Image 1 (tube, rainbow, N blue to C red):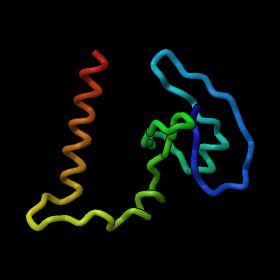
Image 2 (cartoon, rainbow, N blue to C red):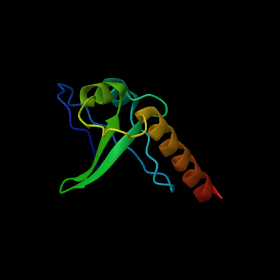
Image 3 (cartoon, rainbow, N blue to C red):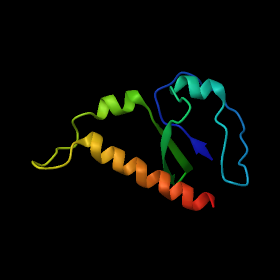
Image 4 (cartoon, rainbow, N blue to C red):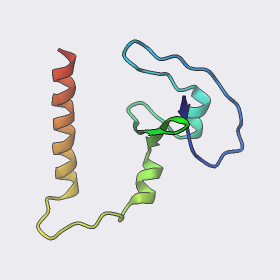
Length: 97
């Protein structure tokens, strides 16, 4: 079960299917409602009710801005993020082989 937690007045439901790779297509009305665009990442969490999928969107990032304190001498966040993305791409390339 994939569940989105958010304040919403929409109670519409859809069925989705998982591919052999574990991929699932989120219906367009949900992608619009939660501002999910091509390349949007999500946090996946196991819950007693099933799988909770939380899209990491620009709005979510903006709300969380300033939550993490940086230590003096830390690399700039942009540099840390670039390193993280590079490691992520390398990992994906290794798994694709």
